[in-house]
Amino acid sequence: MYIDPAYQKLLDCGIRPSLQRIEIMRYLQTHKTHPTIDDIYVELKKRIPSVSRTTIYNTLRMFSEKGGALMITIDEHRVCYDGCTTPHAHFCCKECGHVFDLPDMQPPRTAKPIYRRLPHRRRAALLQRHLP
Image (cartoon, rainbow, N blue to C red):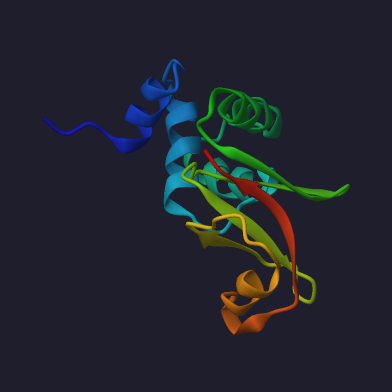
């Protein structure tokens, strides 16, 4: 029997599934772009006309509190979300603002090994590490 991965993730986190919660989780799981609330709102509004930014904000806050998503603070004006809750680090390119993952990152002795692994060796700032 097939169970939607977004639905299952909500159950695993102790979150009661609803249409909007499932759609928000599905969006996080299928878009690895570290979306903002506005990114999610623009896409979901096309499928669920009744969805509001407030609903998305409250849902994402609940997801991050219950372990269903990660909230990533870029700066005082920008917060994005990640549906991948396995151990990894987030980096932000100082030039273009793109947020990207560095999977399986173990705490290094220095930053050199990390920066060698970055795509295109971008100038980047470590935002957060999500380790077990």
